[in-house]
Length: 486
Image (cartoon, rainbow, N blue to C red; front, side, top):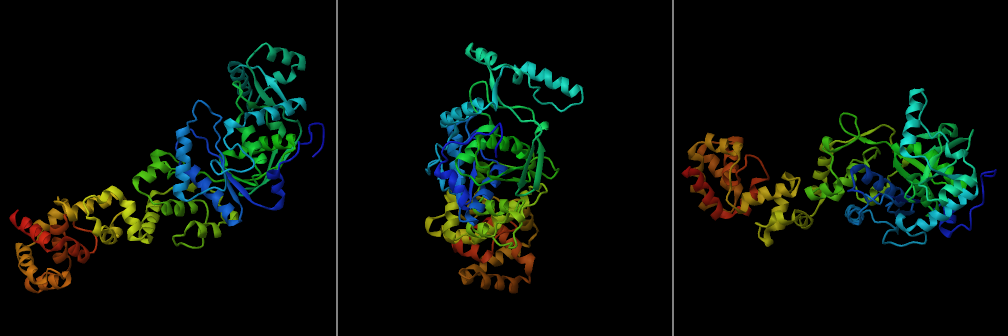
Protein backbone atom coordinates (compact mmCIF):
# COMPACT_ATOMS: atom_id res chain seq x y z
CA UNK A 1 0.00 0.00 0.00
CA UNK A 2 1.32 3.42 -0.91
CA UNK A 3 -0.03 6.95 -1.06
CA UNK A 4 -0.15 10.17 0.91
CA UNK A 5 -1.47 8.51 4.04
CA UNK A 6 0.99 5.61 4.20
CA UNK A 7 4.24 5.50 6.11
CA UNK A 8 6.42 2.40 6.64
CA UNK A 9 6.03 0.60 9.92
CA UNK A 10 9.10 0.44 12.13
CA UNK A 11 11.08 -2.81 12.38
CA UNK A 12 8.52 -5.61 12.49
CA UNK A 13 8.81 -7.99 15.41
CA UNK A 14 9.34 -11.71 15.01
CA UNK A 15 5.74 -12.17 16.12
CA UNK A 16 4.38 -10.11 13.23
CA UNK A 17 6.68 -11.72 10.70
CA UNK A 18 5.44 -15.11 11.87
CA UNK A 19 2.07 -14.26 10.32
CA UNK A 20 3.59 -14.91 6.90
CA UNK A 21 4.70 -18.47 7.66
CA UNK A 22 1.14 -19.87 7.64
CA UNK A 23 1.07 -20.44 11.41
CA UNK A 24 -2.48 -19.94 12.66
CA UNK A 25 -2.82 -17.84 15.78
CA UNK A 26 -6.23 -17.07 17.26
CA UNK A 27 -7.07 -15.10 20.34
CA UNK A 28 -9.67 -14.48 23.01
CA UNK A 29 -9.67 -10.90 24.23
CA UNK A 30 -12.32 -10.38 26.92
CA UNK A 31 -12.88 -7.26 28.98
CA UNK A 32 -12.75 -7.95 32.75
CA UNK A 33 -15.96 -6.06 33.45
CA UNK A 34 -18.13 -9.03 34.42
CA UNK A 35 -18.46 -12.78 34.30
CA UNK A 36 -18.23 -14.68 31.02
CA UNK A 37 -21.59 -15.22 29.34
CA UNK A 38 -22.29 -17.95 26.79
CA UNK A 39 -21.59 -15.71 23.80
CA UNK A 40 -18.10 -14.94 25.16
CA UNK A 41 -17.48 -18.58 25.97
CA UNK A 42 -18.51 -19.80 22.52
CA UNK A 43 -16.15 -17.26 20.90
CA UNK A 44 -13.30 -18.48 23.11
CA UNK A 45 -14.18 -22.11 22.30
CA UNK A 46 -14.25 -21.59 18.53
CA UNK A 47 -10.99 -19.66 18.67
CA UNK A 48 -9.30 -22.42 20.67
CA UNK A 49 -10.72 -25.20 18.47
CA UNK A 50 -9.53 -23.47 15.30
CA UNK A 51 -6.00 -23.04 16.65
CA UNK A 52 -5.88 -26.64 17.86
CA UNK A 53 -7.26 -27.95 14.57
CA UNK A 54 -4.57 -26.08 12.60
CA UNK A 55 -1.73 -26.94 14.96
CA UNK A 56 -1.46 -23.25 15.76
CA UNK A 57 -1.50 -21.09 18.88
CA UNK A 58 -4.30 -19.73 21.05
CA UNK A 59 -3.66 -16.41 22.81
CA UNK A 60 -5.40 -14.81 25.80
CA UNK A 61 -5.35 -11.00 26.06
CA UNK A 62 -7.17 -8.92 28.65
CA UNK A 63 -8.72 -5.70 27.34
CA UNK A 64 -9.04 -3.61 30.49
CA UNK A 65 -9.04 -0.08 29.09
CA UNK A 66 -12.45 0.58 30.68
CA UNK A 67 -10.87 1.57 33.97
CA UNK A 68 -14.16 2.37 35.68
CA UNK A 69 -15.59 -1.12 35.21
CA UNK A 70 -12.56 -3.41 34.94
CA UNK A 71 -11.77 -5.53 37.99
CA UNK A 72 -8.84 -7.83 38.75
CA UNK A 73 -11.31 -10.30 40.27
CA UNK A 74 -13.03 -10.66 36.88
CA UNK A 75 -9.68 -11.36 35.22
CA UNK A 76 -9.11 -14.22 37.66
CA UNK A 77 -12.65 -15.47 37.00
CA UNK A 78 -11.98 -15.49 33.27
CA UNK A 79 -8.81 -17.52 33.74
CA UNK A 80 -10.55 -19.99 36.05
CA UNK A 81 -13.50 -20.40 33.69
CA UNK A 82 -11.30 -21.08 30.66
CA UNK A 83 -9.17 -23.59 32.54
CA UNK A 84 -12.28 -25.31 33.89
CA UNK A 85 -13.45 -25.80 30.30
CA UNK A 86 -10.02 -27.11 29.31
CA UNK A 87 -9.30 -24.11 27.08
CA UNK A 88 -5.67 -23.58 28.00
CA UNK A 89 -3.83 -20.89 26.07
CA UNK A 90 -0.36 -21.06 24.52
CA UNK A 91 0.48 -17.39 24.82
CA UNK A 92 -0.69 -14.38 26.76
CA UNK A 93 -1.79 -13.77 30.31
CA UNK A 94 0.37 -15.82 32.72
CA UNK A 95 1.63 -17.92 29.78
CA UNK A 96 4.22 -15.49 28.43
CA UNK A 97 5.25 -14.75 24.89
CA UNK A 98 7.33 -12.25 22.96
CA UNK A 99 4.50 -9.82 22.12
CA UNK A 100 3.48 -8.72 25.62
CA UNK A 101 2.34 -7.12 27.77
CA UNK A 102 -0.90 -9.03 27.35
CA UNK A 103 -2.97 -6.68 29.50
CA UNK A 104 -3.93 -3.53 27.62
CA UNK A 105 -3.57 -1.17 30.56
CA UNK A 106 0.16 -2.00 30.51
CA UNK A 107 0.48 -1.19 26.80
CA UNK A 108 -0.12 2.57 26.96
CA UNK A 109 3.47 3.49 25.88
CA UNK A 110 2.96 1.39 22.74
CA UNK A 111 -0.29 3.16 21.96
CA UNK A 112 1.25 6.59 22.62
CA UNK A 113 3.92 5.91 20.01
CA UNK A 114 1.31 4.83 17.47
CA UNK A 115 -0.86 7.89 18.14
CA UNK A 116 2.17 10.12 17.58
CA UNK A 117 2.89 8.41 14.27
CA UNK A 118 -0.68 8.86 13.08
CA UNK A 119 -0.68 12.52 14.04
CA UNK A 120 2.66 13.10 12.37
CA UNK A 121 1.24 11.60 9.17
CA UNK A 122 -1.90 13.71 9.37
CA UNK A 123 -4.06 10.67 9.99
CA UNK A 124 -5.27 11.74 13.45
CA UNK A 125 -6.17 15.05 15.07
CA UNK A 126 -7.38 16.34 18.46
CA UNK A 127 -11.12 16.92 18.81
CA UNK A 128 -12.42 19.43 21.36
CA UNK A 129 -16.14 18.92 20.77
CA UNK A 130 -18.14 18.36 23.95
CA UNK A 131 -20.72 15.60 24.35
CA UNK A 132 -23.47 18.22 24.20
CA UNK A 133 -22.15 19.58 20.89
CA UNK A 134 -21.82 16.08 19.45
CA UNK A 135 -25.34 15.11 20.48
CA UNK A 136 -26.77 18.32 19.01
CA UNK A 137 -25.00 17.61 15.73
CA UNK A 138 -26.30 14.04 15.62
CA UNK A 139 -29.85 15.22 16.37
CA UNK A 140 -29.69 17.72 13.52
CA UNK A 141 -28.45 15.05 11.13
CA UNK A 142 -31.26 12.69 12.11
CA UNK A 143 -33.83 15.47 11.69
CA UNK A 144 -32.47 16.04 8.18
CA UNK A 145 -32.80 12.35 7.38
CA UNK A 146 -29.06 11.74 7.31
CA UNK A 147 -27.21 9.00 9.24
CA UNK A 148 -25.43 10.52 12.23
CA UNK A 149 -21.66 10.76 11.96
CA UNK A 150 -19.01 13.18 13.08
CA UNK A 151 -19.35 16.44 11.16
CA UNK A 152 -15.61 17.06 10.98
CA UNK A 153 -15.70 20.27 13.03
CA UNK A 154 -12.24 19.90 14.54
CA UNK A 155 -10.79 18.33 11.41
CA UNK A 156 -10.81 21.82 9.93
CA UNK A 157 -8.75 23.41 12.72
CA UNK A 158 -5.25 24.52 11.79
CA UNK A 159 -2.40 22.57 13.34
CA UNK A 160 -1.36 25.71 15.23
CA UNK A 161 -4.78 26.32 16.75
CA UNK A 162 -5.20 22.67 17.73
CA UNK A 163 -1.74 22.59 19.33
CA UNK A 164 -2.44 25.77 21.28
CA UNK A 165 -5.71 24.40 22.66
CA UNK A 166 -4.03 21.14 23.68
CA UNK A 167 -1.23 23.10 25.37
CA UNK A 168 -3.82 25.15 27.23
CA UNK A 169 -5.16 21.95 28.76
CA UNK A 170 -8.49 21.91 26.93
CA UNK A 171 -10.10 18.43 27.18
CA UNK A 172 -9.98 16.58 23.89
CA UNK A 173 -10.18 13.20 22.23
CA UNK A 174 -8.07 11.98 19.32
CA UNK A 175 -9.92 11.19 16.11
CA UNK A 176 -8.83 9.11 13.15
CA UNK A 177 -9.10 10.99 9.87
CA UNK A 178 -11.03 8.77 7.48
CA UNK A 179 -9.94 9.21 3.86
CA UNK A 180 -12.66 10.13 1.38
CA UNK A 181 -13.67 8.03 -1.58
CA UNK A 182 -12.09 4.75 -0.52
CA UNK A 183 -13.59 1.27 -0.60
CA UNK A 184 -12.75 -1.08 2.27
CA UNK A 185 -13.06 -4.70 1.25
CA UNK A 186 -12.35 -7.95 3.06
CA UNK A 187 -13.37 -11.59 2.94
CA UNK A 188 -15.24 -12.58 6.08
CA UNK A 189 -14.62 -16.18 7.15
CA UNK A 190 -18.34 -16.70 7.78
CA UNK A 191 -20.17 -14.13 5.66
CA UNK A 192 -18.01 -13.97 2.57
CA UNK A 193 -17.07 -10.77 0.68
CA UNK A 194 -17.70 -7.52 2.53
CA UNK A 195 -17.50 -4.01 1.12
CA UNK A 196 -17.76 -0.65 2.90
CA UNK A 197 -17.39 2.90 1.65
CA UNK A 198 -15.21 5.25 3.66
CA UNK A 199 -17.68 8.04 2.83
CA UNK A 200 -20.18 6.30 5.12
CA UNK A 201 -17.78 6.43 8.06
CA UNK A 202 -17.24 9.60 10.02
CA UNK A 203 -13.91 10.39 11.65
CA UNK A 204 -13.96 8.28 14.80
CA UNK A 205 -12.38 8.47 18.25
CA UNK A 206 -9.26 6.38 18.81
CA UNK A 207 -8.26 7.94 22.15
CA UNK A 208 -10.73 9.06 24.78
CA UNK A 209 -10.66 12.31 26.72
CA UNK A 210 -9.05 10.56 29.70
CA UNK A 211 -6.20 9.34 27.49
CA UNK A 212 -7.28 5.70 27.32
CA UNK A 213 -7.45 4.00 23.92
CA UNK A 214 -10.79 3.35 22.26
CA UNK A 215 -11.74 -0.22 21.35
CA UNK A 216 -11.45 0.36 17.60
CA UNK A 217 -7.81 1.26 18.02
CA UNK A 218 -6.22 -0.91 20.69
CA UNK A 219 -8.12 -4.05 19.72
CA UNK A 220 -6.94 -3.79 16.12
CA UNK A 221 -3.32 -2.84 16.70
CA UNK A 222 -2.86 -5.44 19.42
CA UNK A 223 -4.09 -8.20 17.10
CA UNK A 224 -1.54 -7.06 14.53
CA UNK A 225 1.36 -6.57 16.94
CA UNK A 226 0.70 -9.92 18.59
CA UNK A 227 0.67 -11.78 15.29
CA UNK A 228 -2.97 -12.86 15.43
CA UNK A 229 -3.90 -14.35 12.06
CA UNK A 230 -7.59 -15.13 12.59
CA UNK A 231 -10.07 -13.14 14.68
CA UNK A 232 -13.33 -14.79 15.69
CA UNK A 233 -15.98 -12.52 17.20
CA UNK A 234 -19.72 -11.83 17.19
CA UNK A 235 -21.48 -10.38 14.17
CA UNK A 236 -22.22 -7.25 16.19
CA UNK A 237 -18.58 -6.31 15.52
CA UNK A 238 -18.91 -6.58 11.74
CA UNK A 239 -19.33 -2.84 11.24
CA UNK A 240 -16.20 -2.20 13.34
CA UNK A 241 -14.01 -4.09 10.91
CA UNK A 242 -13.85 -1.40 8.23
CA UNK A 243 -12.63 1.16 10.79
CA UNK A 244 -10.04 -1.23 12.16
CA UNK A 245 -8.74 -2.08 8.71
CA UNK A 246 -8.33 1.64 8.00
CA UNK A 247 -6.21 1.96 11.16
CA UNK A 248 -4.05 -1.05 10.30
CA UNK A 249 -3.53 0.12 6.73
CA UNK A 250 -2.62 3.63 7.88
CA UNK A 251 0.02 2.15 10.20
CA UNK A 252 1.26 -0.37 7.66
CA UNK A 253 0.40 -3.24 9.99
CA UNK A 254 -0.61 -6.74 8.85
CA UNK A 255 -4.31 -7.52 8.77
CA UNK A 256 -5.78 -10.64 10.39
CA UNK A 257 -8.63 -12.51 8.78
CA UNK A 258 -11.97 -11.83 10.44
CA UNK A 259 -14.83 -14.23 11.06
CA UNK A 260 -18.06 -12.84 12.50
CA UNK A 261 -20.17 -15.43 14.30
CA UNK A 262 -23.96 -15.41 14.31
CA UNK A 263 -25.27 -14.19 17.64
CA UNK A 264 -26.90 -16.48 20.18
CA UNK A 265 -30.59 -15.66 20.65
CA UNK A 266 -33.46 -16.86 22.80
CA UNK A 267 -36.65 -18.58 21.67
CA UNK A 268 -38.14 -15.19 20.76
CA UNK A 269 -35.22 -14.32 18.49
CA UNK A 270 -33.98 -11.57 20.79
CA UNK A 271 -30.36 -11.50 21.97
CA UNK A 272 -29.81 -14.10 24.67
CA UNK A 273 -30.34 -12.84 28.21
CA UNK A 274 -31.22 -14.12 31.66
CA UNK A 275 -34.92 -14.01 30.83
CA UNK A 276 -34.26 -16.82 28.33
CA UNK A 277 -32.70 -18.95 31.07
CA UNK A 278 -29.15 -18.00 30.12
CA UNK A 279 -26.54 -18.15 32.85
CA UNK A 280 -22.98 -16.99 33.14
CA UNK A 281 -20.35 -19.70 32.98
CA UNK A 282 -19.79 -19.25 36.71
CA UNK A 283 -23.48 -19.93 37.32
CA UNK A 284 -23.35 -23.03 35.14
CA UNK A 285 -20.37 -24.29 37.13
CA UNK A 286 -22.08 -23.61 40.44
CA UNK A 287 -25.22 -25.41 39.33
CA UNK A 288 -23.16 -28.46 38.42
CA UNK A 289 -22.87 -28.59 34.65
CA UNK A 290 -19.85 -30.57 33.54
CA UNK A 291 -17.25 -28.97 31.22
CA UNK A 292 -17.87 -31.61 28.55
CA UNK A 293 -21.59 -30.76 28.52
CA UNK A 294 -20.89 -27.05 27.99
CA UNK A 295 -18.23 -27.53 25.31
CA UNK A 296 -20.24 -30.11 23.37
CA UNK A 297 -23.35 -27.93 23.41
CA UNK A 298 -21.61 -24.67 22.51
CA UNK A 299 -19.49 -26.30 19.80
CA UNK A 300 -22.74 -27.23 18.03
CA UNK A 301 -24.40 -23.85 18.61
CA UNK A 302 -23.86 -22.34 15.19
CA UNK A 303 -21.44 -25.02 13.95
CA UNK A 304 -22.46 -28.45 12.63
CA UNK A 305 -20.70 -31.71 13.43
CA UNK A 306 -21.18 -34.96 11.56
CA UNK A 307 -20.93 -36.91 14.82
CA UNK A 308 -23.61 -36.69 17.49
CA UNK A 309 -21.35 -38.39 20.04
CA UNK A 310 -19.96 -36.72 23.13
CA UNK A 311 -16.54 -35.50 21.96
CA UNK A 312 -13.50 -34.37 23.89
CA UNK A 313 -11.77 -31.14 22.94
CA UNK A 314 -9.29 -32.85 20.64
CA UNK A 315 -12.12 -34.50 18.70
CA UNK A 316 -14.11 -31.26 18.59
CA UNK A 317 -11.03 -29.48 17.25
CA UNK A 318 -10.29 -32.17 14.68
CA UNK A 319 -13.75 -31.73 13.16
CA UNK A 320 -13.91 -27.92 13.46
CA UNK A 321 -14.26 -26.23 10.08
CA UNK A 322 -15.20 -22.59 9.39
CA UNK A 323 -17.19 -23.83 6.39
CA UNK A 324 -19.57 -25.50 8.87
CA UNK A 325 -20.35 -22.21 10.65
CA UNK A 326 -23.86 -20.98 10.00
CA UNK A 327 -24.89 -17.42 9.20
CA UNK A 328 -28.29 -17.64 10.89
CA UNK A 329 -28.74 -16.75 14.54
CA UNK A 330 -27.93 -19.64 16.89
CA UNK A 331 -30.93 -20.37 19.10
CA UNK A 332 -30.19 -21.21 22.73
CA UNK A 333 -32.08 -24.21 24.08
CA UNK A 334 -31.61 -25.10 27.75
CA UNK A 335 -33.09 -28.56 27.12
CA UNK A 336 -30.27 -29.27 24.68
CA UNK A 337 -27.68 -28.19 27.23
CA UNK A 338 -29.31 -30.58 29.70
CA UNK A 339 -29.17 -33.31 27.04
CA UNK A 340 -25.39 -32.93 26.82
CA UNK A 341 -25.21 -32.88 30.61
CA UNK A 342 -26.84 -36.32 30.63
CA UNK A 343 -24.37 -37.52 28.02
CA UNK A 344 -21.43 -36.17 30.00
CA UNK A 345 -22.65 -37.82 33.21
CA UNK A 346 -23.10 -41.12 31.40
CA UNK A 347 -19.51 -40.96 30.15
CA UNK A 348 -17.97 -40.08 33.51
CA UNK A 349 -16.40 -42.69 35.77
CA UNK A 350 -17.83 -43.26 39.26
CA UNK A 351 -14.71 -41.63 40.73
CA UNK A 352 -15.25 -38.55 38.56
CA UNK A 353 -18.90 -38.46 39.59
CA UNK A 354 -17.96 -38.58 43.26
CA UNK A 355 -15.71 -35.56 42.79
CA UNK A 356 -18.44 -33.76 40.85
CA UNK A 357 -21.11 -34.43 43.48
CA UNK A 358 -18.90 -33.04 46.24
CA UNK A 359 -20.76 -32.04 49.39
CA UNK A 360 -23.98 -33.66 48.20
CA UNK A 361 -22.48 -36.99 49.31
CA UNK A 362 -21.92 -36.03 52.94
CA UNK A 363 -24.47 -38.59 54.14
CA UNK A 364 -22.96 -41.38 52.01
CA UNK A 365 -20.19 -43.49 53.61
CA UNK A 366 -16.91 -42.93 51.76
CA UNK A 367 -16.56 -46.63 50.94
CA UNK A 368 -19.97 -46.64 49.21
CA UNK A 369 -19.76 -43.37 47.25
CA UNK A 370 -18.60 -44.73 43.92
CA UNK A 371 -21.16 -47.53 44.07
CA UNK A 372 -23.86 -45.05 45.01
CA UNK A 373 -22.99 -42.68 42.13
CA UNK A 374 -22.99 -45.58 39.68
CA UNK A 375 -26.51 -46.37 40.90
CA UNK A 376 -28.03 -42.88 40.62
CA UNK A 377 -26.11 -41.44 37.63
CA UNK A 378 -29.00 -41.95 35.18
CA UNK A 379 -31.44 -40.15 37.47
CA UNK A 380 -29.52 -36.98 38.28
CA UNK A 381 -28.49 -33.86 36.38
CA UNK A 382 -26.93 -31.81 39.14
CA UNK A 383 -25.39 -32.30 42.59
CA UNK A 384 -28.66 -31.07 44.12
CA UNK A 385 -30.35 -34.14 42.61
CA UNK A 386 -27.64 -36.35 44.10
CA UNK A 387 -28.42 -34.91 47.52
CA UNK A 388 -32.05 -35.97 47.21
CA UNK A 389 -31.11 -39.58 46.51
CA UNK A 390 -28.41 -39.62 49.16
CA UNK A 391 -30.98 -38.57 51.72
CA UNK A 392 -33.41 -41.20 50.39
CA UNK A 393 -30.89 -43.96 51.04
CA UNK A 394 -28.96 -42.85 54.09
CA UNK A 395 -31.31 -40.58 56.02
CA UNK A 396 -34.97 -40.58 57.04
CA UNK A 397 -37.12 -40.40 53.95
CA UNK A 398 -39.96 -37.96 53.37
CA UNK A 399 -42.15 -39.39 50.58
CA UNK A 400 -43.15 -37.01 47.81
CA UNK A 401 -46.79 -36.82 46.68
CA UNK A 402 -46.61 -39.53 43.97
CA UNK A 403 -44.90 -41.86 46.44
CA UNK A 404 -47.51 -41.20 49.11
CA UNK A 405 -50.26 -41.94 46.59
CA UNK A 406 -48.58 -45.18 45.51
CA UNK A 407 -48.27 -46.34 49.12
CA UNK A 408 -51.86 -45.37 49.95
CA UNK A 409 -53.32 -47.16 46.94
CA UNK A 410 -51.37 -50.41 47.47
CA UNK A 411 -52.93 -53.29 49.44
CA UNK A 412 -51.53 -53.65 52.96
CA UNK A 413 -50.88 -57.29 52.15
CA UNK A 414 -48.06 -56.18 49.84
CA UNK A 415 -46.02 -54.65 52.66
CA UNK A 416 -46.73 -57.34 55.25
CA UNK A 417 -45.73 -60.03 52.74
CA UNK A 418 -42.63 -58.09 51.74
CA UNK A 419 -41.57 -57.85 55.39
CA UNK A 420 -42.31 -61.52 56.03
CA UNK A 421 -40.24 -62.70 53.02
CA UNK A 422 -37.32 -60.37 53.71
CA UNK A 423 -35.59 -62.78 56.06
CA UNK A 424 -35.49 -65.48 53.36
CA UNK A 425 -34.51 -63.24 50.42
CA UNK A 426 -32.94 -60.15 52.01
CA UNK A 427 -29.80 -60.37 49.90
CA UNK A 428 -31.46 -60.93 46.53
CA UNK A 429 -33.90 -58.28 45.26
CA UNK A 430 -35.14 -60.29 42.30
CA UNK A 431 -35.80 -63.42 44.36
CA UNK A 432 -37.53 -61.28 47.00
CA UNK A 433 -39.88 -59.51 44.57
CA UNK A 434 -40.62 -62.75 42.71
CA UNK A 435 -41.67 -64.41 45.97
CA UNK A 436 -43.84 -61.39 46.84
CA UNK A 437 -45.49 -61.56 43.42
CA UNK A 438 -46.24 -65.28 43.81
CA UNK A 439 -47.77 -64.73 47.22
CA UNK A 440 -49.82 -61.59 46.43
CA UNK A 441 -50.53 -61.99 42.72
CA UNK A 442 -49.24 -58.46 42.10
CA UNK A 443 -47.03 -57.79 39.09
CA UNK A 444 -45.32 -54.98 37.21
CA UNK A 445 -46.20 -51.44 38.22
CA UNK A 446 -48.64 -52.56 40.92
CA UNK A 447 -45.81 -54.49 42.60
CA UNK A 448 -42.72 -52.39 42.06
CA UNK A 449 -43.96 -48.81 42.41
CA UNK A 450 -45.35 -49.18 45.96
CA UNK A 451 -42.18 -51.02 47.05
CA UNK A 452 -40.01 -48.28 45.54
CA UNK A 453 -42.14 -45.60 47.19
CA UNK A 454 -41.89 -47.31 50.56
CA UNK A 455 -38.12 -47.84 50.36
CA UNK A 456 -36.99 -44.57 48.70
CA UNK A 457 -39.79 -42.05 49.16
CA UNK A 458 -40.00 -41.65 45.38
CA UNK A 459 -42.34 -43.26 42.84
CA UNK A 460 -39.63 -43.28 40.16
CA UNK A 461 -35.87 -43.54 40.20
CA UNK A 462 -32.79 -45.71 39.72
CA UNK A 463 -32.74 -49.48 39.30
CA UNK A 464 -34.27 -50.86 42.50
CA UNK A 465 -31.99 -53.90 42.65
CA UNK A 466 -29.01 -51.60 43.18
CA UNK A 467 -30.87 -49.49 45.72
CA UNK A 468 -31.91 -52.64 47.56
CA UNK A 469 -28.25 -53.60 47.97
CA UNK A 470 -27.29 -50.11 49.16
CA UNK A 471 -30.06 -49.96 51.75
CA UNK A 472 -29.30 -53.27 53.44
CA UNK A 473 -31.73 -55.59 55.17
CA UNK A 474 -31.99 -53.65 58.44
CA UNK A 475 -32.96 -50.35 56.80
CA UNK A 476 -35.40 -52.06 54.43
CA UNK A 477 -37.13 -53.67 57.40
CA UNK A 478 -37.35 -50.33 59.21
CA UNK A 479 -38.93 -48.61 56.22
CA UNK A 480 -41.45 -51.36 55.59
CA UNK A 481 -42.52 -51.26 59.25
CA UNK A 482 -42.81 -47.47 59.06
CA UNK A 483 -45.22 -47.75 56.12
CA UNK A 484 -47.29 -50.40 57.86
CA UNK A 485 -47.59 -48.23 60.98
CA UNK A 486 -49.01 -45.24 59.12
